[in-house]
Image 1 (spheres, rainbow, N blue to C red):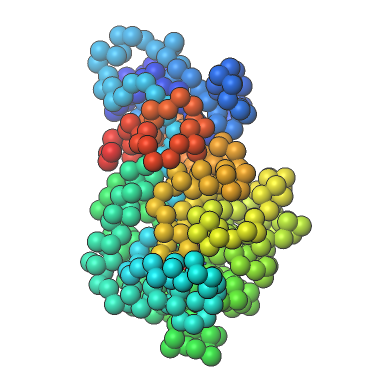
Image 2 (image 1 turned 90 degrees about the vertical axis):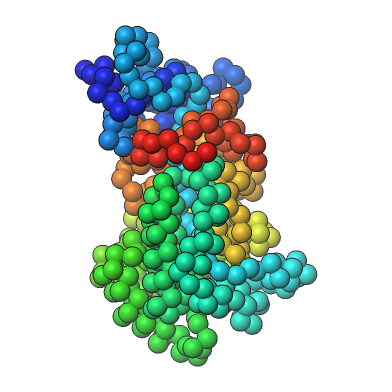
Length: 431
Ligand code: NIG
Ligand code: FE
């Protein structure tokens, strides 16, 4: 039966060590006996390692997985063998980015290095608002062109799915412009793009001293238009002293729900306003940043299956010292995802592999947790199907073939290319 699936396949890969990220009983059993522990690497069952395997793809999905030992050698003569040997992981998923913007914040970086706080720069009209000015002044084509090298950097190290937020337009026209560019990037390149409307990112100057009226605009115009034009998959907020209050964020969540859009939140990045719990109680897919999240108040996240998205690049770049409550999140069984948060102000770092490394060094995640954070847990943070971010039969055929000795290397050595093949929807592309 399985052999038939291999005969019918569009392509097959042979002699693979699979990092399935599958927590099914079958893969766990295999992992226990063969995930490299004998080589002295720390191990547990989360990688779901299956050694010496063959994998078949049909119609852009994984159609069969079987041990090499069960393979009929006669098949190899007629099959379309697309690759042989190496470690294979799911394609990487960057579940939080602000990839589309114009302008640079290098001068703000210099100011911050001289001791001026991020919040002070924002309150004085710099920060996010300086990127808003540049983004409003840029055409759709200019924004697209500026985003391309950033996207290529992410793809070149294995990103197959990427979330892109608006939030630097802050008018109806400019927010929709950003979302259209994000959609166009997904159409122009072999990468899946999920879009998020972040109208409630900062208060634009036109609404100073009238932030509720701006929230009216977000709820009554931006969300309906983005939903009707199918430009947004989700809605996000910046729940913070320099962003919007919990009461205002709740209005945005209600409007998003009314229009059938998923909910996400920038919460507890700089202070504890209980935005994470609020978002979770509205069924948020994820709450993101979380440095100031109260370790004793995680129940709403548990009850609603909300993913904790950790953004070590922003933690590092802002020289933050308060750590997210990692051990409490772990104890509560809350899935932790990791993302670049690529943006010009707090994380101008277009490397998801670097984020994996930082998640380990700065946040003390294990390399295995880091890989789950950019595969299956990131998929959950985007509301993708349960098999996304895993190598299992039926899953999207987004796979990476690596020249490494063990999957822990993915969080370990940064900057040296290790990707042999990037496979998106079954097609080898880009690298
Ligand atoms: O995720 N915290 C709010 N938004 C972004 C930063 C945006 C900016 O500074 O341009 C973040 O860190
Ligand atoms: Fe962000």
